[in-house]
Image 1 (cartoon, rainbow, N blue to C red):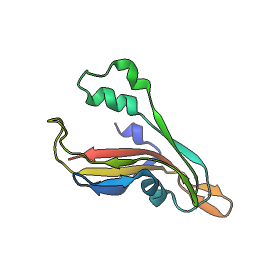
Image 2: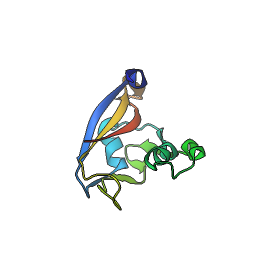
Image 3: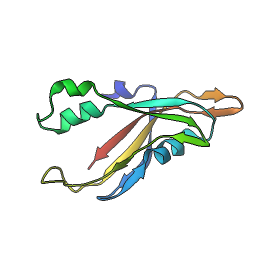
Amino acid sequence: MNWIYSGVKLNHAAILGVGDSKPLALLISDVSGSCSADFGIGIPIGALAVALSGGAVSPWAAGLSAGIHYTSSSSLNIYGGIQNYGEWKNIGQDVLEYIYVGVSDYTYHVGRCDTQVPIGIYIEAR
């Protein structure tokens, strides 16, 4: 499993209790720095839906994804957030969610500013 994270450092971003939420814009900007740089992150919402549905969602949906795009430190085009709903309609459990943002081990130089580009978001429920 470690090969998946090769070249990526997981930075702890938040702990969400049941009912807590955090905007994606804050998660991304907290770890990426204040450089004026453009980058995007894909979110495998289809794969998550198939994995968490217990077979209710057709396997073809695993290919669906959504994306977020960061344009600069003063202009965020990142919408949505992560919320810990806990147990919902007798599905799941009321546990804490540990949110990590994976950032590239490589430093990118943008003008006189250095930044590490976010690669993805990792959520651990325990």
